[in-house]
Each structure stands twice: as structure tokens, then as C-alpha cells.
Image (cartoon, rainbow, N blue to C red):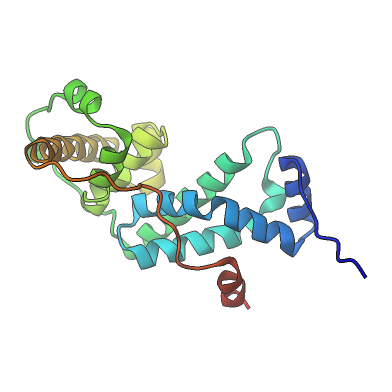
Length: 207
């Protein structure tokens, strides 16, 4: 007897299969997006093991909440938002993002235009990963996810002034790292992190 393997030619078909709870659809989504979502999680959590745990929890949330996905937007973008939410939940629990910097401690305003123009995406992501947790979280939300300071303050439970100060400090540190990198260039490495957990291992973990 010939075994028929489900094949989803469109995103709509894939999402419909997820809503039916088809295991094949779960596997395809995990294998298609795991690398990208691992990169998202490692931007918020520098520890690889923790980032992978966040990613796995995020995929479980995606599968559990798939009925909440409105198909008028990007499916990948929705998954990304789930991963960001899971990352922030992890940081809240561990209180790693509560490093607040008084405004008086912020250094002189750096040359943002020069720093932003000089950084390519790969350098930026590598350097962002080296920032302290609080600075990295605010920078990611503001510069990469597009949150306003008011939204960041509401999301993290901090003041808008703290959000602005942490962003200012983060960009100053990035500029300092850039100057150092220009003096001591290092070979570029791939920014997308491949998770060590396969789909079958992820599935076994949830049983």
C-alpha cells in the first residue's frame, strides 16, 4: 500500500493543517523556521541553552495558539512575535532586564548617524549579543522590533526615561565596540544560529 505524505504548497494549506493538529505540519513549520527563530531568541538571551529552551517553548505556544493567527498577515511575522513574547517572559522571570541606568550616568550622546551607517547587519547582531541584558532587550525592541519607548515601558514595566537611557547607553556601547572592531577586525560568521534540538527531540520533550 502506498503511503501518502501530506504536501502543503501554500502557507494557507500549512496553517489549515496546523489548525487540524497534523503532526506533519508541525514538523514542517519547526524545520522551516527553527533557524530563524533561534536567531531571534539569541538576540534576547545570550545563553544558547536558555535561548533554545525559549525557542522550543515558543513553538509549543505557536502550535497551541494557532487558532489566534489571523491569516491577513505574515505567518512568519506572527511566529516571530510569539518568540519575542516568550523571550520577554523568560527575562521577566529571571529579572535579567531590570538593570536600570540613571539618566545622569548616560555618557555624552554618541554620533548615532555615524554608528548606524558603519554597522552592517552581521556586525550589529554580533555586537548586540554582547550587550548587558537590559540594554540588549531595549535595543532589540526599539531598533529591531520597532517598539516605541512608551510600548517598551509598558511591556517591561519600566519608565520611558529608563527605556531612553538604556537605548542611549546601548548605542554608545555599540559605537565603542565598532571602533574597537575597526582596529582589530575579526572574520565574519553566520548570524543565524542552528538549534541543536531536532523536531523529533522537540516532540519527545513535550510528551
